[in-house]
Length: 196
Ligand SMILES: [Zn+2]
Image (cartoon, rainbow, N blue to C red; front, side, top):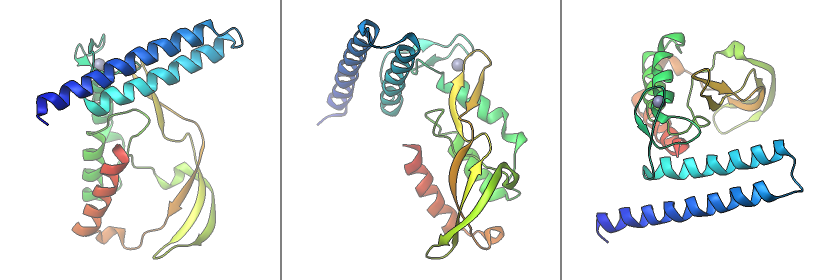
């Protein structure tokens, strides 16, 4: 299959997904069993899925972002504004380790969606830390992440909004200060998969 044929296949799939999304939006709007808040929620979820497919395939109708004037793909946020926001925040956090900071910054610059962002979380942003079990090479804890991870883009305030408190699993790593290249590469591979 040629590259041109593959691109047109993706475009055709996106077009059909767009038609399906529009059809579902019409169905949601016409559904008398739903109250307005439920309709708004359902339509937003449909648009999130549509955005996700467009961004992951880097294909689809683009629009001019009213903030940065770039031609973005997403409808609920602007992928360029999200990257600019993350880049501008680099000086607001540090792990204390140059290699880890560099890795997280690189991951952030490959962010595709506002609800899937790799970030450094200071230890004091966790509460209710409880020992859970011992894993293969480390101890595992549960905790509550105060304010939680990024969830969506706030177009009015031009910033990323957080989800709210989230229960998370913590894994203790030994000798992180001496993290060597292979450890970092392993984390990179995992984070690349996470980004998808
Ligand atoms: Zn923008």
